[in-house]
Length: 177
Picture: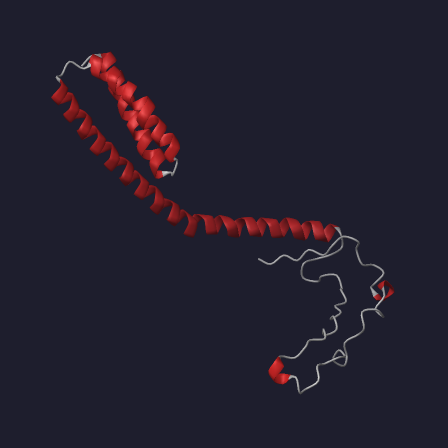
């Protein structure tokens, strides 16, 4: 075969491989476009340069289609296995390393602010009073709770002055690693 025929054949193989890969990736429209618009013109260009008869050309194409489809399927399977392995080993190690680095940077920043992750700012937690709930029909003979349980402060009484004076104005960030 001539150099032109070899180049045209390489184009046919490349176009068909693209069709197969795009189909595997779920890009069906682009795969279909190449299959219906690009590949026929690539095959026609190759056919003009190839000296074999029509039957031999057809066999050569069919053999290439089968070989390329098998090659793409095998490569896809290897890629999926590799991605699975990477996600369970390398990515988890990378995640741990990133968490360590982030924690170190965060601790450094908090230290410059006079705070730390191990001793968060004191925050007064106030529980909301229990809501008045209508009992279900089968329990209507018992009165519903109308007052909050003992020991729960009334939120209307809790004022901002009860919070520490040195409380930062920015929200508290909680990190869990």
